[in-house]
Amino acid sequence: MSLKERIAHIEQRVKEACERSGRSIEEVHIVAVTKYVSLDTTRSVLDEGISHIGENRPQNALPKWEALGGRGTWHFIGHLQSNKVKDVIGRFQYIHSLDRLSLARELEKRAAAKGTQVLAFLQVNISGESSKQGIQPHEAAAFLKETAGLPHVKIIGLMTMAPIVDDPEQTRPVFRALRELRDDLNAQGLSKEPLKELSMGMSDDFEIAIEEGATWVRLGTLLVGKGEET
Image (cartoon, rainbow, N blue to C red; front, side):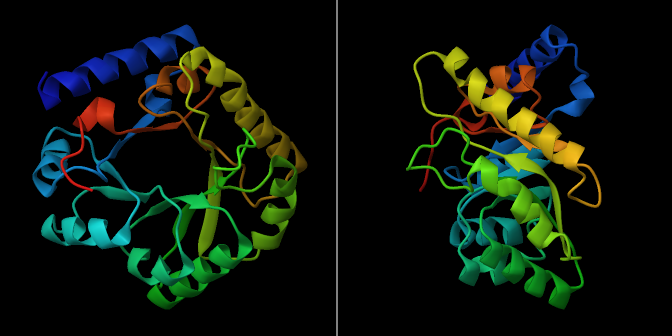
């Protein structure tokens, strides 16, 4: 199946998931996770109309970003070390992995120096797995209060990763819990603007995530195929 065909197939599945859950397809955005594929494949993704690119290692992403002349909208989707923030600010518009206050403060410092604003997702470890990054759900309210005064870091929503399971249906409680947490935080009025976004769902479970409210799905293998590089 060609890249064009894969994209068309994915878009049809997104459409059907939205129809099942009474949502508009306009609410759901696809991030092409290109972290394991070549510059040429990343360029092809952009050429086919997928404008959101997801990467998780600055050292691998920056050569692509520069070669592509900054085309597309770039999302940082992996664990972000504080000493790498300087490489991310000004190139990545979205950070999906804000998971500690020290990182929020470093993002604020670097974004202020660049005169820009970072759009961030607060990463929450809904599943409770020790292998997963993210704050605990009960810590989210305090985190939002602590970061409310950072003008250059705008938390727009929540992100989580579901466990890897044989039956995608088993991920539904995780995605539902993230949506319910977002709604609860909004009801408390802890942020200047309501949290609208939910970054959740990957190649194996994105349809379940959409049915439970995902606004951003992160698709790697299903969209770009097997990795060509690490």
